[in-house]
Image (cartoon, rainbow, N blue to C red; front, side, top):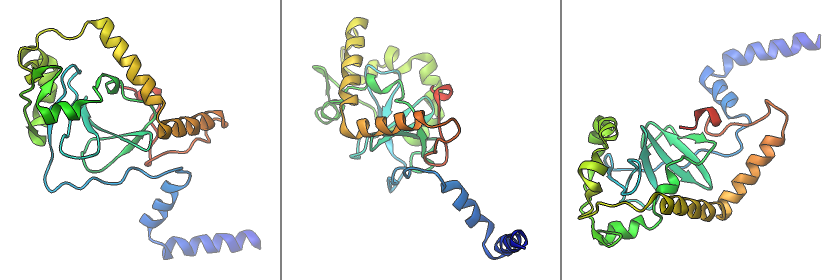
Length: 214
């Protein structure tokens, strides 16, 4: 009798509760924290390409670091990385630090404001979002910004030596992992790894593992 009763209740719920609502409940079960809050833009943003990077673009006119790289928009929030095909929605949790990040000079905002990059005049080009999506693959294949434009940096022919670039990456990585919000998230990740297989939660409705680290 009890089984019949519960089956009857479930059958009634299927007609009373709309399907999208039931699906939404299922999606959010087990999510430990929400995706980042939206960034409101009055119009599609413009970006600039950052020197000394592998075609990393950034939106310079907002307080949040919003990057475009390798066909994705990237965002760091509360020590966690998210990515999306769109600049203003669809954020999905990414389980690792994207490999471009430690090439980004943390002082880029000051360089942008002063229009100088490491002592050279920086004639950066503001690129509309639509033009970025139409051309980023070709620019990357041709090494357009590095070889033809030198990222807009005047008389900037010689990048720092490879050894120096590796040292800078290592230094930035150490500074990154000392951030309190990053350490809190790292602790959460370690706790998740110690759980039995199959019990990990997902963030933003999707979980990205090592096999998707591009």
